[in-house]
Structure formats: structure tokens, C-alpha cells
Image (cartoon, rainbow, N blue to C red):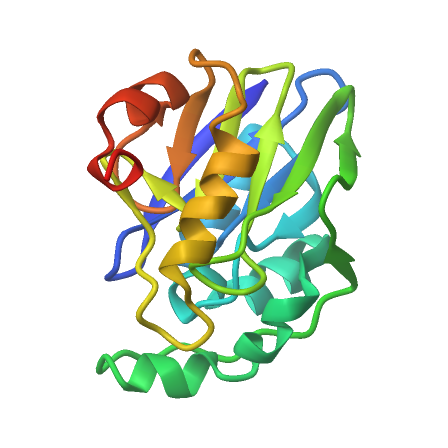
Amino acid sequence: MLLETIVVGPLGVNCFILGDKKSKEGVVVDPGADSDMVLAAVNRLGLKIKYLINTHGHFDHVGGNRQVKEATGAEFLIHQSDVRLLEMAARSAQNYGLVVENSPLPDRYLTDGMQLSYGTRTIEVLHTPGHTQGGCCLFLRHEGVVITGDTLFADSVGRTDLPGGSHEQLIRSINEKLLPLDDAVVVWPGHGPSSTIGQERRYNPYLNE
């Protein structure tokens, strides 16, 4: 698997570029800003982007959607429950003194259990509401990796004090969808360093309250 992580925007979002070496099909996850950097990496890797995926709809994860979609022609997917956030991105960013453009609407909705294939590789969608109602994680079973967006971080979990957030629901999502994964599965979060499911199961203070 080809992989590049680019930390984008002032809030430090991890934008992931996934690629299949044989077919050169690829996926861009959460291009929240700095689209030129993201597209430069796509070109350097020689990828044809099949999917543009948002783990959720907050402005810091969706700000580069339009540019990436227009440049690559990728199919854009997000969970239906977060579509309304796409059209609020610019206004939400203003609350933080930042400038972000609204995102185009998705071509298709993510759903729990959906399988998305690129080349010989497959992404399994796990709906994990709590940070937002449409929050999703992306499980790469063959690679032993789960992209968790703002659901689960190293030693932390996503904030739940924004509209649509629920701490109880978030913890339930993690317990039901993420903790059943093998301890060795690597966690790639939406912000900050990577971890593993086993590390978070044992030491994450929010999961051991």
C-alpha cells in the first residue's frame, strides 16, 4: 500500500492519501486545507484518486474538498448525517477566526458496513457517531489499520461539546465498533500521533473511566 500523511491547516488535521501500487488507484481522506500540498503528493505518487472521503463534516476536515474533487474527479463520500455541516463550514471556521470555503455536496453517502474497493484493496466503513452524528472510521482490514477521524485519538477521544455531539454515544461507538478490533490494529487519528487499539484499550483514560 502506498501511503502519505499530510498535516493540513492551522488545526493540524491528518490528511491521508492511500494508494494501491498495482492499479495506482487511490483515496484521499480528510483534505481539510492546503489542497495544493495534497494534490502535489497525489501527483508525485502517480495516483488516480477514486474516492474522496470525509470521516466527518467539521470545517477543518472538509475545507479542501472542492479543490481536490475538481482536480481529481474523485467520487466524494460522507455520512448523510453530516451533510448539513458541509454547507456550514465557512461560517463555522469564522467562529475560530479562520477562512474555509464550503464543501460541495457528496456524490454518495457512507453507510455502516459499506465496502469501498480501490485496486486490490478494500476500506470497510464503521459508523461511529458521538463526535458528530455522521462520524465514521475507515477500517483497512488487510493492512491492519483503522482511520479514526475525530472519534479516537492517542490517549484521548473526540470532543462532544459541539452541536450533535454526545460523549455517551461516542464511548458506545468506540466500545462497539473499535475495541472489538485486534490489539495490533494501528490507529491513524484525525489529529496527532498514531497508536494501536491495544494501547488505547489499556491506557486511554476516557475508555477506563
